[in-house]
Amino acid sequence: MASYKELKEWFVTGFNGSTQLDIIQVCMFLPAALLLRNISCKSQNFIYDFIFTVIPIIGSVTSTEFNLLKLIILALVCIINSHKLTSPFTNTRPAFEIKDGVKRFQFVTEYRSLMLVATCISILAVDFPIYPRRFVKTETTGVSLMDIGTGSVLFSSALVARSARDPLKPLFQKIKAAMFSCLPLLLIGSLRVIVHKMVDYQEHVSEYGVHWNFFLSLGVVVVAAPFLDGSPMTRVIFSIVIMIFYQILLIFGLEDYIFNGPRDNFFSMNREGILGCIGFFCIYQIGLGLKQLILDSKNYMRNLAYATAFSMIITQILFAFVDPSRRLNNVSYTSWVVSHNLFYLSVVCLAERCVVNCSPNAIIDAINYNQLPYFMLSNLMTGIVNVSMFTLYTPGCLAYFIITLYMFTALSVMWLLLKFHIKLKFW
Image 1 (tube, rainbow, N blue to C red):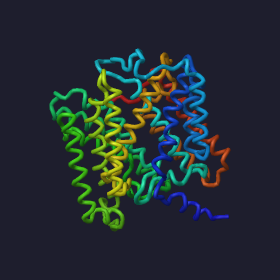
Image 2: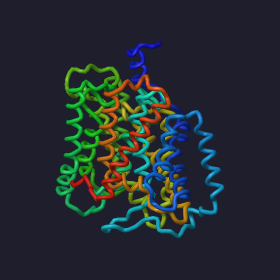
Image 3: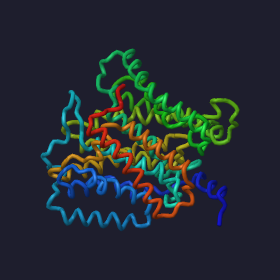
Image 4: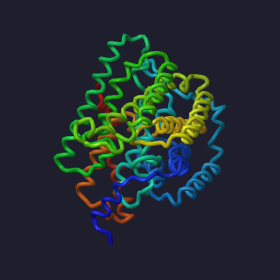
């Protein structure tokens, strides 16, 4: 039997990742679960919504050897219930509602919430043997399921960002609002570093560095966003120019520094996280730039299809010349994140528009009401599980139970907050 040290080394060692088809097959459970729930539940019910929305996604990232079979079964269920479905192109049900003067597309809300569900499942499941090693964050180059998480959070946040709602607002006010908005993120990120060092929590240095983390990257991107102000097309073009320039720097020595440089000061110890903000910033800006195009009141489906097809073609071309790398956040990786998010946004849109009448989803509504608190609670619970047991030795059935209980608990808290109209985000 392998020693604990050997198992630990195995679990934190990155891989070249899985195939793109494998990742697509796993993530197709997001729209599949949505469609299954919408044709199965006639009213909002937390237990039913958890079974039909969350359980299929848990199964998709763990029992991957049966994923194709499970997708076929879900497809057959939908075919059997085809009388409840309609053409997404002729559905007369409104795709969005106007609230506080802002268009809120239902499929965007569902895409963001389902993506966060899959992310929160993965951050705990990855510590158990039932989670496939090919889905772990890659060490150098390649792509995997967990490589898409941070970029997806940023891209999805851009689609609902307040900073893009009032283009005539003075730049100074935008910067002030962004700084106020990012303060909680920077505080959370700093506290996370302190707590991790105090409890000697296991971390993978090549992910963000010694002190850096996701919340700090998100805070930096948010506070820097107003400085690239302009039209949607300007944001996209400037982001592309920045990524090309960054890729040139990688080719001429920066890549070797990130992979092999010494860690002898704050910058070098956290170079992955700090330099990675360049790629994350561009992903966020592209999301802001595409927002107005793909969320058009009349042609949202057509525009979304065009944007998805174009971005996926560009991504495959880039893959032929530049190996994608989450650690570098290089041009092919950022393009891959954007194209995959557009693809999943497209299929969630189709799944949402295929149903004539669908009742509110308790899981979607609860997450949407308190998204950042839900992600923070999931991170906290993940840490509690990891310091209280040896996850590496956990049998499959017990691991399934723990992951399900963890998701049920976190979502129950969010549902209760929604029920009592308690919104924890006040900034």
